[in-house]
Length: 428
Image (cartoon, rainbow, N blue to C red; front, side):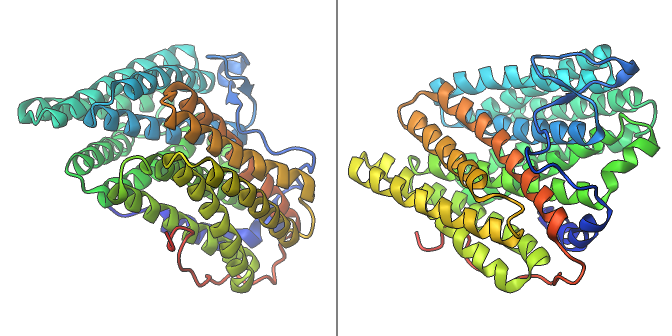
Protein backbone atom coordinates (compact mmCIF):
# COMPACT_ATOMS: atom_id res chain seq x y z
CA UNK A 1 0.00 0.00 0.00
CA UNK A 2 1.57 3.28 -1.08
CA UNK A 3 0.94 6.23 1.18
CA UNK A 4 -0.30 9.36 -0.55
CA UNK A 5 1.51 11.67 1.84
CA UNK A 6 4.37 12.17 -0.64
CA UNK A 7 2.30 14.10 -3.22
CA UNK A 8 0.77 16.18 -0.42
CA UNK A 9 4.21 17.20 0.82
CA UNK A 10 5.28 18.04 -2.70
CA UNK A 11 2.20 20.21 -3.05
CA UNK A 12 3.01 22.00 0.19
CA UNK A 13 6.60 22.59 -0.92
CA UNK A 14 5.63 23.98 -4.30
CA UNK A 15 2.54 25.87 -3.25
CA UNK A 16 3.56 27.54 -0.01
CA UNK A 17 5.18 30.46 -1.78
CA UNK A 18 2.54 30.66 -4.50
CA UNK A 19 -0.17 30.80 -1.87
CA UNK A 20 1.22 34.02 -0.49
CA UNK A 21 1.16 35.58 -3.92
CA UNK A 22 -2.25 34.62 -5.26
CA UNK A 23 -4.47 34.56 -2.20
CA UNK A 24 -6.49 37.36 -0.74
CA UNK A 25 -5.64 38.18 2.87
CA UNK A 26 -7.62 36.12 5.33
CA UNK A 27 -9.34 37.51 8.37
CA UNK A 28 -7.27 37.47 11.53
CA UNK A 29 -10.25 37.31 13.79
CA UNK A 30 -11.52 33.83 12.97
CA UNK A 31 -10.49 30.66 11.15
CA UNK A 32 -12.00 29.75 7.82
CA UNK A 33 -15.17 27.73 8.39
CA UNK A 34 -14.74 23.97 8.60
CA UNK A 35 -18.13 22.94 9.89
CA UNK A 36 -20.42 24.26 7.22
CA UNK A 37 -22.10 22.08 4.67
CA UNK A 38 -22.75 23.45 1.17
CA UNK A 39 -26.13 24.12 -0.34
CA UNK A 40 -25.87 25.59 -3.79
CA UNK A 41 -27.80 23.08 -5.88
CA UNK A 42 -30.69 24.72 -7.62
CA UNK A 43 -29.83 28.03 -6.01
CA UNK A 44 -31.37 26.93 -2.70
CA UNK A 45 -29.74 27.25 0.68
CA UNK A 46 -31.02 25.08 3.48
CA UNK A 47 -29.95 23.07 6.48
CA UNK A 48 -29.42 19.34 6.14
CA UNK A 49 -28.98 16.89 8.99
CA UNK A 50 -28.32 19.66 11.49
CA UNK A 51 -25.29 20.95 9.55
CA UNK A 52 -25.40 24.58 8.45
CA UNK A 53 -25.38 25.21 4.70
CA UNK A 54 -22.22 26.65 3.18
CA UNK A 55 -22.01 28.89 0.15
CA UNK A 56 -18.47 28.66 -1.19
CA UNK A 57 -16.35 25.99 -2.90
CA UNK A 58 -13.85 26.24 -0.06
CA UNK A 59 -16.45 25.55 2.62
CA UNK A 60 -17.83 22.65 0.61
CA UNK A 61 -14.41 21.09 0.07
CA UNK A 62 -13.49 21.47 3.75
CA UNK A 63 -16.75 19.83 4.80
CA UNK A 64 -16.57 16.87 2.44
CA UNK A 65 -12.88 16.29 3.18
CA UNK A 66 -13.67 16.24 6.88
CA UNK A 67 -16.69 13.98 6.63
CA UNK A 68 -15.29 11.38 4.22
CA UNK A 69 -11.97 11.08 6.07
CA UNK A 70 -13.59 10.91 9.51
CA UNK A 71 -16.22 8.47 8.32
CA UNK A 72 -13.41 6.19 7.13
CA UNK A 73 -11.89 6.10 10.61
CA UNK A 74 -15.25 5.50 12.26
CA UNK A 75 -15.73 2.52 9.94
CA UNK A 76 -12.23 1.20 10.67
CA UNK A 77 -12.81 1.36 14.43
CA UNK A 78 -16.26 -0.16 14.15
CA UNK A 79 -14.84 -3.09 12.15
CA UNK A 80 -12.13 -3.60 14.76
CA UNK A 81 -14.73 -3.64 17.53
CA UNK A 82 -16.30 -6.58 15.69
CA UNK A 83 -12.93 -8.32 15.41
CA UNK A 84 -12.13 -7.85 19.10
CA UNK A 85 -15.66 -8.70 20.27
CA UNK A 86 -16.12 -5.53 22.31
CA UNK A 87 -19.90 -5.04 22.13
CA UNK A 88 -20.07 -1.87 24.23
CA UNK A 89 -17.66 -0.03 21.98
CA UNK A 90 -19.34 -1.48 18.92
CA UNK A 91 -22.68 -0.10 20.08
CA UNK A 92 -21.19 3.38 20.40
CA UNK A 93 -19.42 3.07 17.04
CA UNK A 94 -22.58 1.85 15.31
CA UNK A 95 -24.53 4.83 16.65
CA UNK A 96 -21.85 7.31 15.63
CA UNK A 97 -21.58 5.81 12.15
CA UNK A 98 -25.34 6.06 11.66
CA UNK A 99 -25.47 9.66 12.82
CA UNK A 100 -22.40 10.67 10.84
CA UNK A 101 -23.74 9.01 7.70
CA UNK A 102 -26.91 11.06 8.00
CA UNK A 103 -24.90 14.26 8.35
CA UNK A 104 -22.65 13.33 5.43
CA UNK A 105 -25.69 12.64 3.28
CA UNK A 106 -27.03 16.05 4.28
CA UNK A 107 -23.81 17.68 3.10
CA UNK A 108 -24.02 15.78 -0.19
CA UNK A 109 -27.68 16.75 -0.51
CA UNK A 110 -26.74 20.38 -0.03
CA UNK A 111 -24.29 20.10 -2.90
CA UNK A 112 -26.24 17.92 -5.33
CA UNK A 113 -29.86 18.26 -4.26
CA UNK A 114 -31.96 16.44 -1.69
CA UNK A 115 -32.90 13.54 -3.95
CA UNK A 116 -29.28 12.80 -4.75
CA UNK A 117 -28.38 13.14 -1.09
CA UNK A 118 -30.97 10.52 -0.19
CA UNK A 119 -29.71 8.19 -2.90
CA UNK A 120 -26.15 8.66 -1.68
CA UNK A 121 -27.26 7.86 1.89
CA UNK A 122 -28.81 4.56 0.81
CA UNK A 123 -25.61 3.53 -0.96
CA UNK A 124 -23.46 4.56 2.00
CA UNK A 125 -25.63 2.77 4.56
CA UNK A 126 -25.54 -0.36 2.44
CA UNK A 127 -21.75 -0.12 2.37
CA UNK A 128 -21.57 0.12 6.17
CA UNK A 129 -23.69 -3.03 6.49
CA UNK A 130 -21.39 -4.85 4.11
CA UNK A 131 -18.23 -3.68 5.91
CA UNK A 132 -19.73 -5.01 9.14
CA UNK A 133 -20.56 -8.30 7.42
CA UNK A 134 -16.97 -8.53 6.19
CA UNK A 135 -15.59 -7.98 9.69
CA UNK A 136 -17.97 -10.57 11.11
CA UNK A 137 -16.85 -13.06 8.47
CA UNK A 138 -13.19 -12.40 9.28
CA UNK A 139 -13.89 -12.77 13.01
CA UNK A 140 -15.74 -16.04 12.39
CA UNK A 141 -13.13 -17.34 9.92
CA UNK A 142 -15.96 -17.83 7.43
CA UNK A 143 -14.38 -17.76 3.97
CA UNK A 144 -17.70 -18.02 2.11
CA UNK A 145 -19.29 -15.12 4.01
CA UNK A 146 -16.12 -13.09 3.57
CA UNK A 147 -16.23 -13.57 -0.20
CA UNK A 148 -19.91 -12.64 -0.31
CA UNK A 149 -19.27 -9.44 1.68
CA UNK A 150 -16.38 -8.58 -0.61
CA UNK A 151 -18.58 -9.02 -3.70
CA UNK A 152 -21.25 -6.82 -2.14
CA UNK A 153 -18.73 -4.11 -1.31
CA UNK A 154 -17.40 -4.07 -4.86
CA UNK A 155 -20.99 -3.81 -6.10
CA UNK A 156 -21.44 -0.84 -3.73
CA UNK A 157 -18.46 0.81 -5.42
CA UNK A 158 -20.15 0.35 -8.79
CA UNK A 159 -23.38 1.84 -7.44
CA UNK A 160 -21.44 4.82 -6.14
CA UNK A 161 -19.86 5.34 -9.56
CA UNK A 162 -23.24 5.30 -11.26
CA UNK A 163 -24.60 7.72 -8.67
CA UNK A 164 -21.66 10.12 -8.98
CA UNK A 165 -21.74 10.42 -12.75
CA UNK A 166 -25.48 11.17 -12.64
CA UNK A 167 -25.27 13.59 -9.71
CA UNK A 168 -22.37 15.47 -11.31
CA UNK A 169 -24.15 15.62 -14.66
CA UNK A 170 -21.39 13.65 -16.31
CA UNK A 171 -18.48 15.72 -14.98
CA UNK A 172 -17.05 12.54 -13.47
CA UNK A 173 -17.02 9.23 -15.34
CA UNK A 174 -18.76 6.36 -13.54
CA UNK A 175 -15.70 4.14 -13.93
CA UNK A 176 -13.39 6.72 -12.36
CA UNK A 177 -15.71 7.28 -9.41
CA UNK A 178 -16.16 3.55 -8.88
CA UNK A 179 -12.37 3.07 -8.91
CA UNK A 180 -12.01 5.59 -6.07
CA UNK A 181 -14.49 3.68 -3.94
CA UNK A 182 -12.99 0.31 -4.88
CA UNK A 183 -9.71 1.55 -3.44
CA UNK A 184 -11.57 2.59 -0.29
CA UNK A 185 -13.25 -0.83 -0.06
CA UNK A 186 -9.98 -2.68 -0.55
CA UNK A 187 -8.20 -0.58 2.07
CA UNK A 188 -10.85 -1.22 4.72
CA UNK A 189 -10.86 -4.94 3.98
CA UNK A 190 -7.05 -5.04 4.04
CA UNK A 191 -6.81 -3.30 7.40
CA UNK A 192 -9.38 -5.70 8.88
CA UNK A 193 -7.47 -8.72 7.58
CA UNK A 194 -4.18 -7.36 8.96
CA UNK A 195 -5.69 -6.45 12.31
CA UNK A 196 -7.27 -9.89 12.71
CA UNK A 197 -3.89 -11.46 11.92
CA UNK A 198 -2.30 -9.19 14.57
CA UNK A 199 -0.16 -7.56 11.91
CA UNK A 200 -0.68 -4.21 13.59
CA UNK A 201 2.05 -2.45 11.63
CA UNK A 202 0.23 -3.17 8.39
CA UNK A 203 -3.21 -2.46 9.86
CA UNK A 204 -2.25 1.04 10.99
CA UNK A 205 -0.34 1.82 7.80
CA UNK A 206 -3.37 0.93 5.71
CA UNK A 207 -5.67 2.87 8.03
CA UNK A 208 -3.59 6.00 7.53
CA UNK A 209 -3.55 5.52 3.75
CA UNK A 210 -7.33 5.03 3.78
CA UNK A 211 -7.84 8.27 5.71
CA UNK A 212 -5.69 10.23 3.24
CA UNK A 213 -7.37 8.61 0.23
CA UNK A 214 -10.85 9.62 1.34
CA UNK A 215 -9.77 13.10 2.41
CA UNK A 216 -8.66 13.67 -1.16
CA UNK A 217 -11.87 12.05 -2.44
CA UNK A 218 -13.75 14.74 -0.53
CA UNK A 219 -12.03 17.44 -2.57
CA UNK A 220 -12.99 15.68 -5.79
CA UNK A 221 -16.60 15.26 -4.67
CA UNK A 222 -16.78 18.97 -3.92
CA UNK A 223 -15.25 20.04 -7.24
CA UNK A 224 -17.65 17.95 -9.29
CA UNK A 225 -20.68 19.73 -7.82
CA UNK A 226 -19.68 23.05 -9.40
CA UNK A 227 -19.28 24.17 -13.01
CA UNK A 228 -15.63 23.86 -14.10
CA UNK A 229 -14.91 27.58 -13.88
CA UNK A 230 -16.17 27.75 -10.28
CA UNK A 231 -14.51 24.46 -9.31
CA UNK A 232 -11.16 25.80 -10.51
CA UNK A 233 -10.98 27.89 -7.32
CA UNK A 234 -10.14 24.67 -5.46
CA UNK A 235 -7.01 24.26 -7.61
CA UNK A 236 -5.57 27.56 -6.36
CA UNK A 237 -2.28 27.14 -4.45
CA UNK A 238 -3.73 28.47 -1.22
CA UNK A 239 -6.56 25.92 -1.35
CA UNK A 240 -4.16 23.04 -1.92
CA UNK A 241 -2.01 24.31 0.92
CA UNK A 242 -5.06 24.49 3.18
CA UNK A 243 -6.10 20.96 2.26
CA UNK A 244 -2.59 19.60 2.79
CA UNK A 245 -2.24 21.02 6.28
CA UNK A 246 -5.83 20.19 7.24
CA UNK A 247 -5.28 16.59 6.21
CA UNK A 248 -2.03 16.23 8.17
CA UNK A 249 -3.24 18.01 11.31
CA UNK A 250 -6.51 16.10 11.32
CA UNK A 251 -4.52 12.91 10.82
CA UNK A 252 -2.33 13.85 13.79
CA UNK A 253 -5.42 14.11 15.97
CA UNK A 254 -6.72 10.74 14.88
CA UNK A 255 -3.40 8.90 15.16
CA UNK A 256 -2.90 10.21 18.69
CA UNK A 257 -6.34 8.82 19.56
CA UNK A 258 -5.35 5.46 18.06
CA UNK A 259 -2.15 5.39 20.09
CA UNK A 260 -3.80 6.51 23.32
CA UNK A 261 -6.40 3.76 23.00
CA UNK A 262 -3.75 1.21 22.02
CA UNK A 263 -2.13 1.90 25.41
CA UNK A 264 -4.84 -0.38 26.81
CA UNK A 265 -4.30 -3.05 24.15
CA UNK A 266 -0.65 -3.93 24.76
CA UNK A 267 2.81 -3.12 23.49
CA UNK A 268 2.66 -4.54 19.92
CA UNK A 269 -0.40 -2.52 18.96
CA UNK A 270 0.84 0.57 20.80
CA UNK A 271 4.15 0.49 18.91
CA UNK A 272 2.41 0.09 15.56
CA UNK A 273 0.08 3.03 16.20
CA UNK A 274 2.95 5.15 17.54
CA UNK A 275 4.98 4.48 14.39
CA UNK A 276 2.26 6.18 12.34
CA UNK A 277 2.26 9.15 14.74
CA UNK A 278 5.98 9.46 14.03
CA UNK A 279 5.38 9.25 10.28
CA UNK A 280 2.76 12.00 10.51
CA UNK A 281 5.13 14.20 12.54
CA UNK A 282 7.83 13.69 9.92
CA UNK A 283 5.37 14.71 7.20
CA UNK A 284 4.34 17.83 9.12
CA UNK A 285 7.99 18.70 9.69
CA UNK A 286 8.76 18.40 5.99
CA UNK A 287 5.78 20.60 5.20
CA UNK A 288 7.03 23.21 7.64
CA UNK A 289 10.51 22.94 6.17
CA UNK A 290 9.12 23.78 2.76
CA UNK A 291 7.79 27.03 4.18
CA UNK A 292 10.24 28.18 6.83
CA UNK A 293 13.40 26.23 6.00
CA UNK A 294 15.15 23.22 7.57
CA UNK A 295 16.48 25.00 10.68
CA UNK A 296 13.09 26.28 11.78
CA UNK A 297 11.54 22.95 10.83
CA UNK A 298 13.83 21.20 13.30
CA UNK A 299 12.60 23.57 16.00
CA UNK A 300 9.04 22.72 15.04
CA UNK A 301 9.78 19.01 15.20
CA UNK A 302 11.24 19.32 18.67
CA UNK A 303 8.27 21.32 19.97
CA UNK A 304 5.76 19.02 18.27
CA UNK A 305 7.47 15.89 19.60
CA UNK A 306 7.20 17.27 23.14
CA UNK A 307 3.51 17.85 22.53
CA UNK A 308 3.08 14.24 21.38
CA UNK A 309 5.10 12.87 24.29
CA UNK A 310 2.98 14.72 26.82
CA UNK A 311 -0.25 13.31 25.41
CA UNK A 312 1.06 9.75 25.46
CA UNK A 313 2.55 10.10 28.92
CA UNK A 314 -0.91 11.12 30.09
CA UNK A 315 -2.58 8.08 28.51
CA UNK A 316 0.08 5.80 30.04
CA UNK A 317 -0.74 7.28 33.45
CA UNK A 318 -4.44 6.70 32.82
CA UNK A 319 -3.79 3.08 31.86
CA UNK A 320 -1.74 2.65 35.04
CA UNK A 321 -4.36 4.41 37.18
CA UNK A 322 -1.61 6.70 38.47
CA UNK A 323 -3.26 9.95 39.59
CA UNK A 324 0.01 11.64 40.54
CA UNK A 325 1.54 10.89 37.15
CA UNK A 326 -1.63 12.09 35.42
CA UNK A 327 -1.40 15.43 37.21
CA UNK A 328 2.31 15.76 36.42
CA UNK A 329 1.76 14.92 32.75
CA UNK A 330 -1.08 17.43 32.51
CA UNK A 331 1.08 20.19 33.96
CA UNK A 332 3.89 19.39 31.52
CA UNK A 333 1.43 19.45 28.63
CA UNK A 334 0.52 23.04 29.46
CA UNK A 335 4.15 24.02 29.15
CA UNK A 336 4.52 22.17 25.85
CA UNK A 337 1.45 23.91 24.42
CA UNK A 338 2.79 27.33 25.41
CA UNK A 339 6.17 26.66 23.78
CA UNK A 340 4.57 25.32 20.61
CA UNK A 341 2.23 28.30 20.41
CA UNK A 342 5.18 30.67 20.82
CA UNK A 343 7.00 28.93 17.97
CA UNK A 344 3.99 29.04 15.63
CA UNK A 345 3.34 32.69 16.42
CA UNK A 346 6.99 33.50 15.76
CA UNK A 347 7.28 31.75 12.39
CA UNK A 348 4.30 33.69 11.03
CA UNK A 349 5.69 36.92 12.49
CA UNK A 350 2.95 37.31 15.08
CA UNK A 351 0.15 37.11 12.51
CA UNK A 352 -1.22 34.53 14.94
CA UNK A 353 -1.61 36.29 18.30
CA UNK A 354 -0.07 34.23 21.05
CA UNK A 355 -3.14 34.12 23.31
CA UNK A 356 -5.61 32.58 20.83
CA UNK A 357 -3.16 30.02 19.43
CA UNK A 358 -2.16 28.96 22.95
CA UNK A 359 -5.84 28.55 23.80
CA UNK A 360 -6.46 26.56 20.61
CA UNK A 361 -3.61 24.16 21.36
CA UNK A 362 -4.81 23.84 24.95
CA UNK A 363 -8.27 22.96 23.67
CA UNK A 364 -6.72 20.34 21.38
CA UNK A 365 -4.95 18.77 24.35
CA UNK A 366 -8.15 18.89 26.41
CA UNK A 367 -10.10 17.03 23.76
CA UNK A 368 -7.50 14.27 23.78
CA UNK A 369 -7.35 14.14 27.58
CA UNK A 370 -11.13 13.96 27.81
CA UNK A 371 -11.47 11.25 25.18
CA UNK A 372 -8.88 8.96 26.75
CA UNK A 373 -10.43 9.46 30.19
CA UNK A 374 -13.83 8.54 28.76
CA UNK A 375 -12.40 5.57 26.87
CA UNK A 376 -10.65 4.24 29.99
CA UNK A 377 -13.93 4.53 31.93
CA UNK A 378 -15.71 2.66 29.10
CA UNK A 379 -17.87 5.71 28.39
CA UNK A 380 -17.43 5.01 24.71
CA UNK A 381 -20.18 7.32 23.50
CA UNK A 382 -18.51 10.26 25.26
CA UNK A 383 -15.12 9.21 23.85
CA UNK A 384 -16.60 9.26 20.33
CA UNK A 385 -18.06 12.73 20.85
CA UNK A 386 -14.69 14.07 22.05
CA UNK A 387 -13.05 12.47 19.02
CA UNK A 388 -15.38 14.20 16.58
CA UNK A 389 -15.24 17.58 18.32
CA UNK A 390 -11.47 17.42 18.55
CA UNK A 391 -11.08 16.53 14.90
CA UNK A 392 -13.27 19.42 13.81
CA UNK A 393 -11.39 21.83 16.07
CA UNK A 394 -8.04 20.68 14.68
CA UNK A 395 -9.16 21.44 11.14
CA UNK A 396 -10.00 24.95 12.31
CA UNK A 397 -6.45 25.28 13.66
CA UNK A 398 -5.14 24.19 10.25
CA UNK A 399 -7.17 26.85 8.45
CA UNK A 400 -6.01 29.53 10.87
CA UNK A 401 -2.38 28.49 10.43
CA UNK A 402 -2.63 28.54 6.63
CA UNK A 403 -4.28 31.96 6.77
CA UNK A 404 -1.33 33.29 8.74
CA UNK A 405 1.19 31.61 6.42
CA UNK A 406 -0.34 33.12 3.31
CA UNK A 407 -0.02 36.60 4.84
CA UNK A 408 3.63 36.25 5.81
CA UNK A 409 5.49 33.75 3.64
CA UNK A 410 7.79 35.40 1.08
CA UNK A 411 9.09 34.14 -2.30
CA UNK A 412 12.68 34.14 -1.05
CA UNK A 413 12.00 31.67 1.78
CA UNK A 414 13.66 28.25 1.38
CA UNK A 415 11.53 25.53 -0.15
CA UNK A 416 13.80 22.52 0.44
CA UNK A 417 12.92 19.54 2.55
CA UNK A 418 13.89 19.25 6.18
CA UNK A 419 15.90 16.71 8.09
CA UNK A 420 13.47 14.46 9.92
CA UNK A 421 13.80 11.85 12.59
CA UNK A 422 11.55 10.55 15.33
CA UNK A 423 8.08 11.97 15.45
CA UNK A 424 7.62 12.27 19.18
CA UNK A 425 7.25 8.65 20.29
CA UNK A 426 10.69 7.35 19.40
CA UNK A 427 11.88 7.48 23.00
CA UNK A 428 8.94 5.49 24.37
